Length: 406
Ligand SMILES: Cc1ncc(COP(=O)(O)O)c(C=O)c1O
Image 1 (cartoon, rainbow, N blue to C red):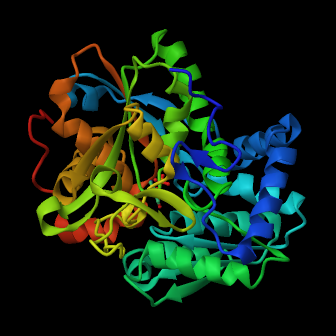
Image 2: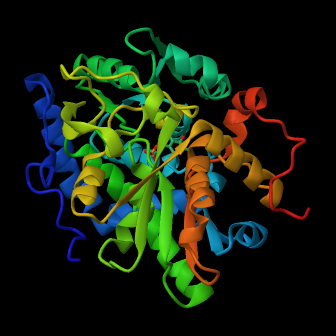
């Protein structure tokens, strides 16, 4: 496939997806961001400065860890890309430090962001403190309750967490309110988008800041195995950790790229977040994408046990890759995810984020697709420390993982 660096086009389109479906009043700010992207992000010096910060402050490169016991459990060679070991406990910091540095170069003095699981909000709070920029984070009331630990962490770093009471009181509504706030504060504030969603140039900028995951994977797996993997699996909320892990491998058709969505309580209950798998084309937050909507085009409320995947849409590049049959779309429901959460914790001593546990659950369900010598990389997008209270309500830790001799 001849894909890398071809998309988006000048209008921010990935095939028929993406674009700039934004109100007139936002266009100057988006155009300013496009200019800043072309001037700075495409400049090697900017990327060197960012990479230095990620190395010294966030702890990159993150390890690519051969999970020996989990491999025996699954039946193929499983490597985990340890994004959970980043400062802040997730991949979000890669993008956040990039955008905050860009905002500084643009002369912005304040940051505003949305958050679902709180990981992006926490990462933005870190950047706010690091760069000395006052920060506001919009968060749905439902998410504030289920991610209280991250709310406290953000506040501890001096960030103002603004509760969102509209709609389903989750991520979609937090983005709405954050963008609304930005529109009234364009002069001095940068809107720090947390995933590869939103109007152009956000899906492009966030992808480029997350590409470091796949670049490292490529170098590391060649060193460890002297060959490329058979498959890479990542969970998809908006899609930033997945595109980051996949991007360097898109042109190599032999490598399966598998994105896993949250099937929540199951398709039949209508309480899920399977936007790529079940959505129809529509516009949300400035971009054409696959979207969960009813027959009148109204957005359906989604459900996932993991706040970070609880989003009715999905990044436009993923939609395009699905359309090109380059991305395989998988799913895992809440119960399968909790089982995988427990399995990795007890087999490897690594507590994954519930979001990342969706990717593990897919692998556990589909282990027969892989043979003993196949190499499968799972992007462990974050740590589960933020999820312990949710998991404690659902999981009996005394029951050991099946098929395992402990
Ligand atoms: C640990 C973790 N993984 C994954 C996600 C999903 O986001 P994305 O699809 O942009 O990687 C989130 C979102 O909050 C997260 O916190």
